[in-house]
Image 1 (spheres, rainbow over the protein chains, first blue to last red):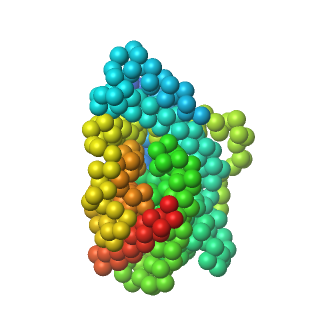
Image 2: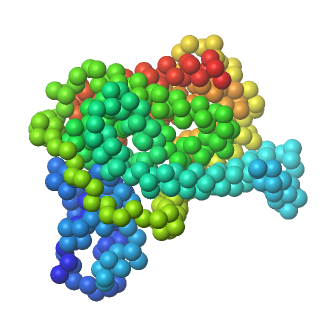
Image 3: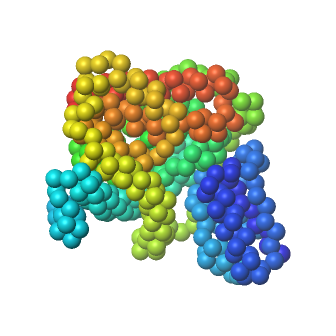
Length: 78
Length: 325
């Protein structure tokens, strides 16, 4: 099972990324656990500079912009 | 370069739609069509060019660059300059702030970056070129960088480290050099292009609605407010116009995309350009939501000082613009 994390303090872009992740999971049927990290102190443990960040299994895949659904699907099925 | 755009707008509105060039409706629609096409072309160009620069100097690299050695003041310029080419989202301001001070970048330099990043970005540059011409756009960019340097320097000299919130102070005490690059091999230019194009189109899409609304409101005002209308109220001679414009602008939260098209019309109708630029700097550079986010890292006192210093710098540059423009 994949561990997906969306890091971002709750701005519009972060919410879109989170929803895109949910949609991508639904469309691919991949089993995954999604965590939303909104607390900044928690977020800084990952040393991010720009949000939103999409992490899959502790690897940063996309940072500083919204990841779109097709992109996330590629990450999930790769 | 945009002659054909005007010709197209004239043809569409006056010939195809058959509206009179004398009528308010005709003028407003003509303005809307012309400006929309022009702004979107410029926007695509500027975001793409800035995207290329940003692809070679991503924020992680800028941080490494600034922490690698002592810069003896040049770091204020570097931070302000790189702030302009980094696309900014107010929700990134806190992670960015922490990431910078954690790496040992001085507080003043970090703040310089934080001021310049929203103030000057691809969107405001593109709209400035389209609405006020190249000369004014260059003045805006240069003064945005200088303003960020000066405000950052003043704030740095105030030694406000003790006014940061506790957890940030702890982070600064345990500061560490950021890890060395794990970027791997540099990508060739052609491989970077798709990513850059995607990013640029994302930015354009993100602001397009604001621009359309801004231009629509501008178009209406263009057609219906008589020329010189504001001159009676806000003139260059009124010493309070600039501070009032800035104080009105600070609590307003909008991006350059929504504000500048309206501003262009206000300038045509008699508001001095310098006052208008100061107002737009206050709107995009400082905002209540950004302040609320920054409360996570700054105490109320420091936040108030931060806003006051930046607002004061904007007011001073407003007067300067009115003198030279």
